[in-house]
Amino acid sequence: MVDLDNPASDGDMHEAIEQFYFAYRGFTDRPDRILEKRGLGRVHHRILYFIGRRPDVSVRGLLDLLAVSKQALNAPLRQLMEMGLVGAEASPDDRRVKRLSLTEAGRKLEAELTEAQTRHLRAAFDRAGAQAQQGWSAVMGELIGK
Image (cartoon, rainbow, N blue to C red; front, side, top):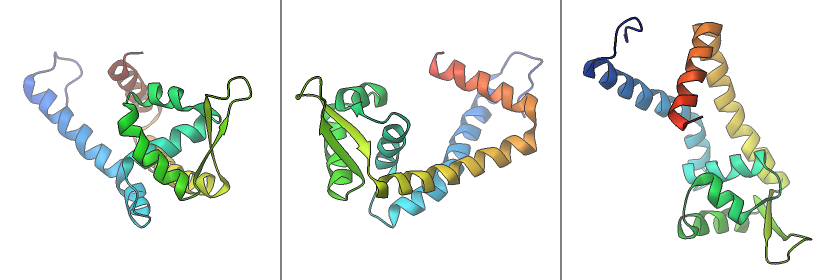
């Protein structure tokens, strides 16, 4: 267990890294199994999640948000479109800009994936308590640079 009253030792950091790794594995397990049945993976999940949270996001906006190259986004996004999970329409302001949105099937899949993760997080936060949740949020904010 990491001792919060003393400066973190290398051992504490190694333990924190392992906890982070295993927590992420647990957090993604159920969604991974749902996606695997459709021949999809985590990159597809990230695309579905962020399009779902930002309806009508542009392709450029999604690239920036995910911090990936066009090449990294192209194949999984095309696959989601071919499967009828994501739609694209030209922006009324600029026909060169493609706006992405989830189809009804995409919304259902994204909701199923997010609900699995929401239940997982909610149960952990309920068990750990409000103070732990605030600490977790602070650490996550620091890790992403907020």
